[in-house]
Length: 411
Image (tube, rainbow, N blue to C red; front, side, top):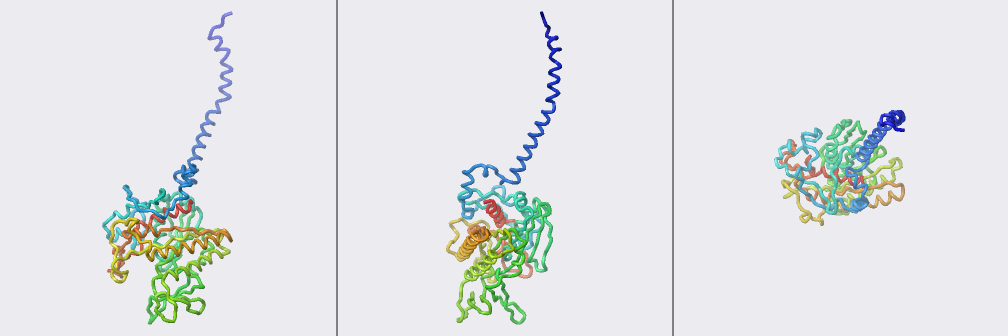
């Protein structure tokens, strides 16, 4: 018997149509599943892992990153510019740090980035940082250089989310900024010495001589500690003046006092005692939860041919090399004391209540950057003729501190 092809087709078509109906739903479902998988993978790598996910996946690269000393390195020229914002894109730059607005003409000092000798330091990622600290409170505790750091970070973060200025005291020393989308709060807690200190007054005028109470901390910052998740503590510049050091009602030591009846010390001694008291308080704080403390090391001034009130200036236009800095200087001695006290506090904290202290060691990097200060371009009409060689221009080398902060947090 012969069967034509058309006859076979007619016999088989009902079965094929049934199969097509049974599997017609599978194609769209498969493509939907693959699409959702791609989206989830993208968000995982973008928001949870570092920008380069291969740093997480490669054990060799991860070990190299963990071994690397982020704080020993040099500055390298960035062809496309190292700035993460401009004085036009950040409306919160203080007048005294807005060096370009105040007349500074050379611009090369913003085109250098910090490069550790043994690895690469990833550039700060504001989006990742905001998600990393979602719902947290980050406080900067210290003097006006600490505030300079907060102002730098604020400018970088404001490029991706606009912050709200929620608190400012009458002297602009205590500040609070809030990022509504990620609920991150930046706080500035201003303190000269960390411990309680009071300036001596004569005839209604400050004398520049201070009495420090080494058994009592400055309440202006410690009362906020229970509400803070991360603290960046720094201090140093205010210790370079006559200080009388008290315990209770007794004067036990002094700095630059030239009193034959009192033991005289250099500023490093007073700084060490203040840090020791502050770190002990943090470790003993029962209501401070899982507070993590970062110690930002001493950021040196760069006055040449004098100090701030004797004609000292800072008009360099490029960084020094690593060979040109002096690691026997007093600046480095202050840094060593900060690291030593931080490491002691970390050992004690980890063994008792699991509290952690970590260093953001900026001293070597900033010893090379005498070109990064406002100098004469700080716009202070009440003190014309004086140069600011302590604080840092914005944008400028201080922005690298946030690169280091994020790298330490990730490690």
